[in-house]
Length: 386
Ligand SMILES: *Cc1c(COP(=O)(O)O)cnc(C)c1O
Image (cartoon, rainbow, N blue to C red; front, side, top):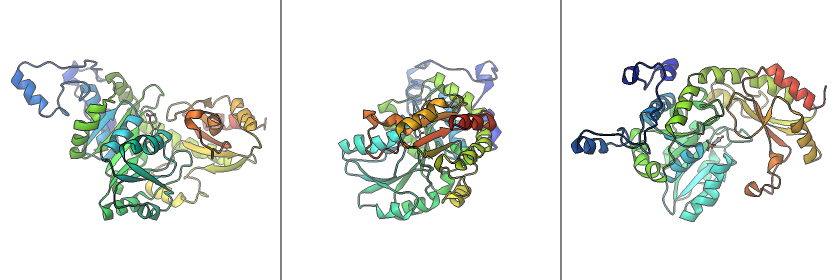
């Protein structure tokens, strides 16, 4: 199946909706039947039937099919947010007394799930430096059930050697779950490298327009059926048909946006790397990055997000730089059309994110669809060059 077929056609059936070119938003919560017998029959396989929208829905189902095809899995489930998808994928495969191993510094709320929520239910986690796959193996305990990957991980963008980690998982009979939000299936194919379950914050690149929250879990039909009957239906973190439709619209241009991001970002990174006020750049596609070879091996193209450590003597200095940026929007999230800046200094004093080891010199950037020259000149002026 070629990429444009998946993005443009797969899962769609114009004759089912008046030959409308784009699919309709089927907002209905419930679906009607002619007979009890037909209703009973549909309920036997609720995950594929149109019965109730906290299960399957025709608009959401198109997105399910496209996401499964993009990740090369048999099926997918769509959630209200990436957070809901991560939670369901992890909870769905662990019981009280189980243990998992996770890359250090994963997405913040993933860390919170593993450190704060799951321990209340008797599930424990060990965080390891994912740059050495052996770290995963060393952390395995008799009750370990799952290895969690996020490559590159949030904030420091260090990689895990995905094939090496999944080989360890196979050797010990463990399940692997990987957050592939940063790369999207276009830039990285976790299942081809042995990963069992792929999770996404579809809020980011897949949506691409900063206007809908969504999450995805991709896996085998059997694993998705198990998840559907338990965490998906009971936790109920399902996407609205309208938001699913927005993600479908975002997918139409995913390949173009990923290409633009891959072209622009290295130019912006190169400018910053050579700037005297920059101490360090965290970006796996920099030739000087210690994992550059691995990045080239397992990622097809550079992504649009990176971090910079500013040479600064005070938080105020970091704040001044960020406040002076005009084209980079000061906001969280990433993956939309707009370039963003998110300084860790924001978290200084934020009780919900309190961290005594906070590196306030660290600033996360996301490069959107603007001309890279425009972004570079904005950085120049904010760094005090013009
Ligand atoms: C944003 C993000 C999430 C959470 O997704 P939401 O859609 O915000 O719930 C998970 N993982 C990564 C890597 C993210 O960037």
